[in-house]
Image (cartoon, rainbow, N blue to C red; front, side, top):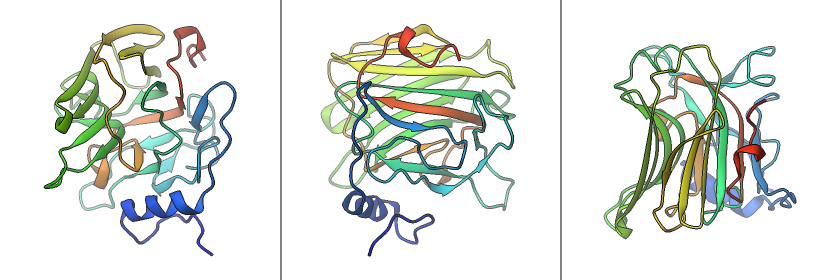
Length: 246
């Protein structure tokens, strides 16, 4: 019998399709919470559609060094060392393209703020460019001193891009990030305060079979921060419904 396994020795796309077949979808909570990863007991999500196993190779803090309990350490290794492979989860059932919210806590580590010219990926879902398909991306990252929330679907001539300065951030401080979509609007919040708004007039771009937390595909752009309490909802939350303050 097929089962959900860590470190599957098959391409991620094939593994994701297998998980779609063998993992039954979980019932959706009444409050609209689709996905929750606290990283307190491992990479597995506490709430998720389908198989909640977090696939990847990543470390966590020990004791109570996270925002709540433990946290994911999203940091690249030394040259020549094994790269940080961010945990990935199924998109199906965990992200509603028409309306939703992604919220999480991050704490900058050395490299996130001191090397601002490098892209650091916090949340990433995409479909790779091929001869028949243009890239489709939903990404939260930092670059050139900005927190960026980026959507793109080139084949549909569509993009949405919100940028938020990080000049007031310091290493060792926790910050809450939230991004909502619904009714054609996007709103970005940092620490409970609205920091950006866009009106692309449609839902999220077509998403890949899985999403990563803490880096992009193939260990690209590790976030260089601690990440904790990642939640994805099926509706656009208001600030008083989010995990800020906590």
